[in-house]
Length: 419
Image: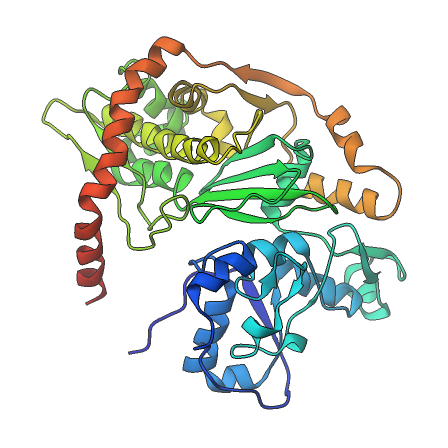
């Protein structure tokens, strides 16, 4: 049985093309990938996914003209042009993207894909083309309207809350967690990801956790069905009830630590075979303890990222919290207390669409990038409690040791699940 590719975010635009080389990329050495691309191969990398198709679905590969992201596919449908931005290419298209030259690297492409199968690279706010007659008929947009190259959803969301200056970092609380810190020079570390940012001479340091909000939903759906049913007649949201059960439990959940690796983990451990662990569970613990421990586990994971950033001299000067998780004040406070960092919460968090609109205005010459920070207003700041921070630190130490102590067992269990 052939293995399936890792979860990815590219789509294939297919039509007949000339045959290609079927070699399997043996000339690419992992030690050279990080040096040339600024990122190691990981579950996020597009290159291995294309190679999987080439090896396991050769008939599909033979008919594939371009490998595109969802964004670049939409740009193609609107304009007829194949384009991708430097941020997306640098962050995801490892090992094809040369971070030194800001271009596709022929040496690492040749055994996997032909360069003409990849979209052209440009800056996010560059004009990719204009609305074609066909696109105008399909969408109702005016023919000839300029279309920018655009970017990924997370980067657009960072822009939407004013994260455009070096030192600022978006901390996105969604189904997963995602971090984008803007830097004025490339900063590379194998535990994180790096890429050019959205504008020339700007860069980004990136991180992502596989399951954050997804674990809280799992908790609700599996262990709080009664609270979900109660919503219908009480009007009180199940998550609000869960927070009520967890809010009075002290830091550390009275001796419980959760590793939030419920679907493997991305940065900083880069381990798709990692799994979730609830450690220290006793008969004295309740549902509220488990919920709080999950929130704390995510907080420990966020702090792990910040610790790495501090270690490599890239600690952000400003954290901006966005996403659905910001509605959970308990969660925000837990994270600030664990990390001993202030989080700013914007008044308006429409999301990526707002950032996309701003980027389109920049690309069409109506706005300058720096003006966005003047528009963003903050609803409030979450300030850390230093005493609570000290209480969390022994548990954070257990958190880090727990992964190292169970890593080999996680990998054995991963293999057992496959069988």
